[in-house]
Image 1 (spheres, rainbow, N blue to C red):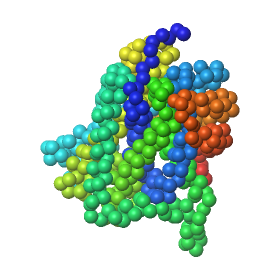
Image 2 (image 1 turned 30 degrees about the horizontal axis):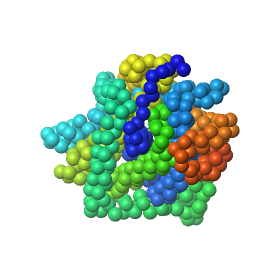
Image 3 (image 1 turned 60 degrees about the horizontal axis):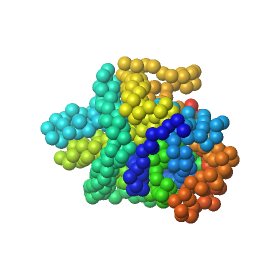
Image 4 (image 1 turned 90 degrees about the vertical axis):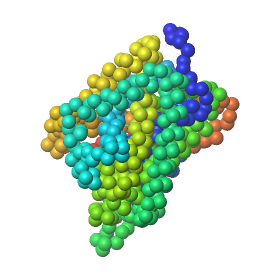
Length: 490
Ligand code: PFF
């Protein structure tokens, strides 16, 4: 073996679960889950999402962690070590986090800016967003279209992540999670309790938690709602896309983190715990956001679905308006909320960054410091496009055609990773494990700790048949959705 360096490892099972959960809990939980749940009938979406997490999500996460622990490699070299002809999955799996971290850090920079703004509001009584935050839309647009500020804040986010990565697995990632994750949990629980106790949030809570058949129905000519199979399909695909995003699957992270796992720890138990942690925070995020936005929509006569709009608008424009209606407590709720989002986004960015750094260390046999520096330079360079894409380069549209309006830089990086590369990687991984490597190789790794693989039958069926088909469906749906073939769009 040319690489004689001892591989880093987590100090225990809890450290691994915390790190993987910290990666999974991010913007996807705090911002994407609530608006999808609101859009797809609240409880109905939650039930479908839970079913997918414990079947499809379980299969994909367990596969990735087992590959990492079995090969003791990060994704770039893990697949080629298992089978020479399938090394391309590892290559694609390294490109994904390398394209995601730059734009994720730019959004992290937006969150940082809002945190600073709420500090000014809470501590100094300043009103940078205008009285009653009525101009939150103008504030947001002015910030993201500035020449330097988005890049500056994004770079601070990259620097903070680099500082953790350079300190290594135990001293950097593990220790930072020990502080950030409990803080995140406390803030999430405190804000949701505050929101639930506000007078008038009952209807919003019902809207979020009570399963509604409306999400699965369409209005007929007689005005009656009737069950629609197509609508059910759309809800399932929406939940599946969210599950991918939220569990940090197909980005190489779980392979890298699995490669630091001890052979004595139980992969199966860890996966269950990570899923519980991630889903719990997503549901709590819905409790923080949906009831207040619902209350705000009713008060201002806005359509609820419109108020819950997707995209950055919900977090950066609507929520500040909602916080402004909470009186003296508003700036403090805003401050706590954006602190929570920073913690979640930072731990996710760290995991994406680590997946790249570990890949370069394994491939080039270089030290962590050099790999961090090299990766950090690429991230900063690529983040420039997303940071300037709403400002000085705001007119640039990629792949514009007569029928398609084209992508802004940030949207393009998001589309190419989440909608194209990640489903391809996930489908290829299932086909590789199910039909080439054979599931028994994964079974052996799962049972290396000496315990029985309880969900073996489910796993085998999922990885061979169910998962590849579903994942290919997501790929088709997501591409059609973005390109505007509305029959498939969500
Ligand atoms: N799972 C994390 C989240 O929910 O935000 C991390 C992540 C997912 C980052 C998907 C980026 C991404 F495209």
